[in-house]
Image 1 (tube, rainbow, N blue to C red):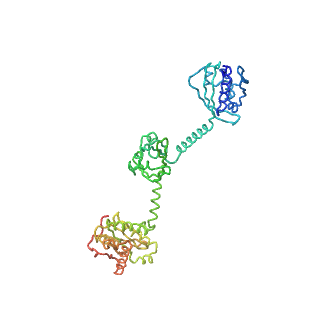
Image 2 (tube, helix red, strand yellow):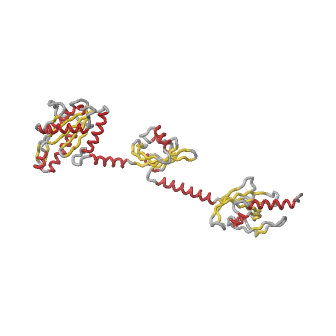
Length: 447
């Protein structure tokens, strides 16, 4: 059956109109006076355009002269960038985003694509407007921008240093606090790698740590070197993240130098005797445990010397306990000044003291103890305005005396304690050890 041209035009128009009505986006056709010449049902619904399509060929659309800038943008005149206003008919479409109040929602975001045309077969100049609702995309984009802005504000005002490294260990981004911590400008930091300030780990170790860290994160302490060469202790919390196929590590850095000093002070208080400032019994046993392990490995020999002040009860009874404390402090200072820096001097309890010393040969300890006893014997103790002389007894035990199978710190202490009892039973003011005491030793020795 032949179809007349008029019938073809009518059927084509109806088919195209039906297809446009199925689109989820709005489509509006305007003439060069910006009047709506045609639109699909979605455009009518969203923008409340009152429009009736022509009922037949040759009939005009029933419209109330709706202008696109009015119904779409709420404007009283054409948009400044509209290609029809500028009398431009480019080959490519013009795209713009706008926000509008619609019948379906008070505030929506739309992306409008303008396709200008001239004449063609429509008999007039105009444009096709393709309008897509991009509210969800725009809202997500705005939220993302706000989140980025918020995170940058937090990073800029953080009291901790924050640095972002790429997978090569190079600085990708850093805040001002981290720059201040290292003494660099933020611009200078962008030219540095992590091994330029971390002095505790090698370059290979740091690269391995970057490769290994993931979203579960890592936490460790290290040592950082400032631009001026000074060092400070740092606490690092890091997380790894992959963006666009690129690995990054976000590290939060905190200067813990004061914290470490405070911890050291607290530890010193915990291991020191408050009266004499010597090491206390607890720390003595910690050190003995370490030396025992070294002896059993065959790397270290050491000795334990236990001292007891002779007739100390008489000092307390005659001069008072405060005077007794003076004697204990002076005796402690004398012991500390009479040993090597590597030796440990501690208060074992009451008027008992201990020296733990590493030695090279049997009998080495007795030489030191002989000198200390002579020095104590010659030292004038000033108590309550009176000068008195006191003496001390000592028991010595050395690791040389034991086989590794029979050795323990407790066995060594027990031997020293037994010999201290022998020294006191034998008249005091003497030392008893595994070898005869060397009587010709000089009075003092160089510390």
